[in-house]
Image (cartoon, rainbow, N blue to C red):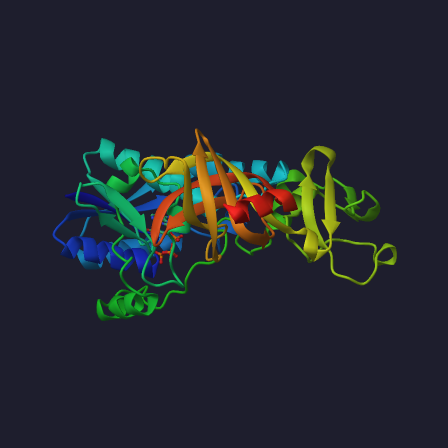
Length: 370
Ligand SMILES: Nc1ncnc2c1ncn2[C@@H]1O[C@H](COP(=O)(O)OP(=O)(O)OP(=O)(O)O)[C@@H](O)[C@H]1O
């Protein structure tokens, strides 16, 4: 096959590229320039896809003796990932930009361009496994290294995208990959792992959003609507958050408060005690399936954040929508988060949480009897 190896300049994609090459494929290395240097020079200097990262990727490609190109997808990334991120927070939701980047950039813009140029597949350094079934169909599975498993952020891929994707690291642990990089003499063998959101270089999401959206003062209220504090922009909050709530402690008892709801339309943040945070009924939209959509009610494991725990659940597909009933209440589920469904280690599909509520005692008892 002719394969584009997506090379970030990190250790994982370096080893992934080497493995695809050794599997006998014809490989071309591609680094994506994703940040707009002119607009965010100060931030991009420590964020993803810097000039240094491109240089690191090029050095690995040179060592492997493969052609190497930089493709500029900065405009697509800004529109589909960064602007979407801002708009989601502005609307009171909590997006996952890595998942969006996989959906819109790596396995859409990059893959489309690769296919248009005559390539057969894209290989990345994601930790996940693609398993080929006897009927030729392909399934996405968790990686063997639970600490690195990235199947959650790949849960948006459909069958066609999966058929064109190679994840050569899914069967290895991170220490094995680092050791292999060292043995291969890659300059990036000891490069630290990337963390957090690549375009929010210092990790301060609220500060980053404030620079884009400006201050929008509003009220923090408790579950009964009583004003208990002030905020500088409801976009700076996420359901389940405990710190930085700006509460007027004189109006409250000493118990900790958590964000229960971000009401963007009214620029209000609702806080309350921990026991009100738990939800077990989710309605998702933008449902995506790695294979055919399941029929009827299916038993699954539901994961709500990258590296979050998997909760036993039942799910029902309904067109673009997904209904999920969790077997137990989970705290801090925000609209905008993705719910990814698993059957054992296999990814079944995903959706974006639109509503997260709690079942009434009567409906919970009815479910328990079923
Ligand atoms: N700027 C980029 N250009 C090309 N490919 C990229 C880029 N950023 C990420 N990728 C691809 O997506 C994969 C997963 O990206 P992620 O940001 O999770 O990196 P990572 O796990 O830190 O991997 P790495 O060690 O390769 O940077 C990478 O291994 C690489 O194949």
